[in-house]
Image 1: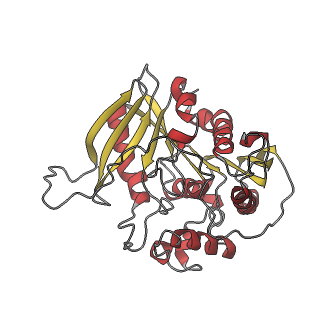
Image 2: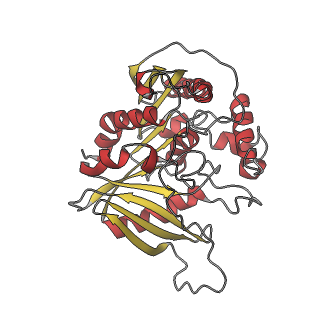
Length: 340
């Protein structure tokens, strides 16, 4: 049974190709340096297993942890948020948008997520990197993006390192926005024993739909990358294998939260009076609303319970994503992680 927080009728709006996933970027703080660099052949790495390369304490509640990924043969930086009191805690993996936070635009700089989690009993891990990757394992290396093995990194490499470094309880959740919303649900499908909860904020959990696959391919190509290196051409088996709507039944037993808006600007967006409306964001949000509605229909058909928040207002802004995050935390993620 679906737990519906708010409802609206479903309308198919015009396709805004290329805009999908470029989430209403507001001016960001100074970009945070990333260590997403390859390990050269001359670099001595005694342990080729995933391991911590460097840890930098930014504040009592914020640490940057650089982790070596054997699958991608490079070091990935990860923002880690923890309450000052520390202790053994569950983990929430919180994914960034289209550019993976590499440009400084993400949860850390464009939302109040760090302050929100400051007193929560959870370790929040935010990988820096993965632009245009959809946080999946690509079928072939890309000339621009290189080797993308993000599913392997997030499900097989990073969790063990985080649990060891920060005394994890073994309970995990994953959540994403825009580009990473559908992939967050897909990660829970691909690694069903790993996550107790999964959430999508204004993402597209039905990527194998023709219009969605064309839009996603166009978005990836906009970065001069070859989208066919991911799951092959649209219509290939890989698209359906990583489509949460096509595999909704596999989410049984996982606490699911999903949310999207019809695209109208509303109070939730916190747009200053007199400012130009985020037209691009409005179109993108209307598109992901349709995509999300398809996923919700699949959940209903499969009899998989979920918390569904389909909204009338919200224009693919960071204020909307943050509101969805807060709602998902209280209704779905915190209870699944047995924390508060």
